[in-house]
Length: 459
Image (tube, rainbow, N blue to C red; front, side, top):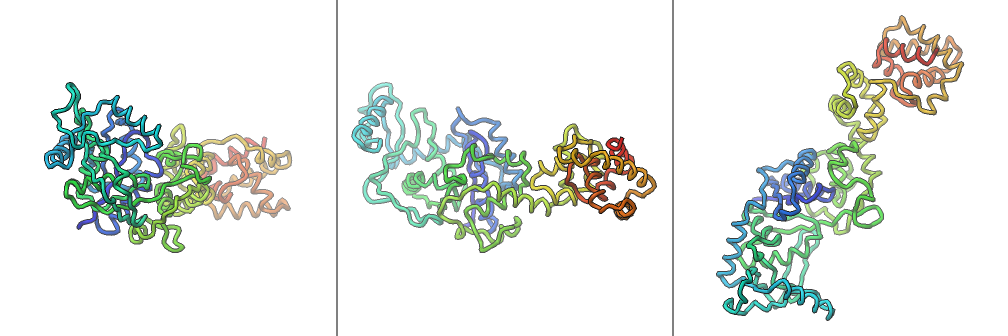
């Protein structure tokens, strides 16, 4: 059976980090086995599904590099097919019409709760003749679920999981307005899309028992199921906004690289020995469901940030320059881009996110305000020294080797250590006490801009 996985988000909100990891696991599993990765937008909840949420999902997946092998399937376009299958079960006696009113169902639920029982449908229309239906009540179609025995799911992560059929009621397949329920639509779509493996969060495990009964009623072969543990915050609670960023595009705006986020999510609940830094190619080669643990993973933003710094230092400098240019406002000119590109190898060594990288590069576009520490370096003796240094640098070629030699010679002539010259100079050029090598900063700024900044603080 060909391997076909799917990611099936509901467009009722942002693409959160747990959904992104689910999509990644589906993608890697299909690629590892030479199969196909598909996307289904489960937009049957028309009241809550929005085009904007759909756009955000598609944009987030594209940014992560998790592009499906076929055009996305929109569940809302398949209502006729969902109804067809439900009516097929009705005709075969595997489903039945239920004429309970909303008031009857509410009373049934209230009584069960009052008696300390789970609020399940009691099956009162399971064996009744539809001709007994009260007038004016549109029926739902319910699955005639087995009442004896148990439903078994052989989960590829959780192992064998069982539930007594007596604990499951006859779920609704079609509502009274003929619209399909989520549990029914998912089964029909997975079958028609020939999905071989359903990899999703373990919060769906209870749904799987009900969906397995639909597969049985239709005589369809069920896919393999793999329910992966959820992601929690560092405190063990369900991941939420109070723990930090949770949506994929929020991580993008905070300056994380997609390869770093995917690398981190891969290792969040899956492991392969001591391997930590894994490229997409390595992840595809190594990933399989056997490495997925059963315990909930805990989000560690500090570890993600560290990992992002590693990937920043591996990234193509031109790409990082483009990212910095995109983030700077107002947009810099081409001359600024050249300065940023020239200094990028040094700039990225001191940054862990694109936001930090952009902040570190901002001095190449315009002189920022002096930080308190930088201002403290520029006392009167330091300013007099910088005035002399500006004069000494006027005839020096503004390329790193020549500038380094000139700074060392100046320091020696002044009877100072190189750092005693470099630090006030760094403050004058960047407004900060840290930067790439000072000779590289001078070269990137160029003679005109660099000497202008030195003179501005030296007077």
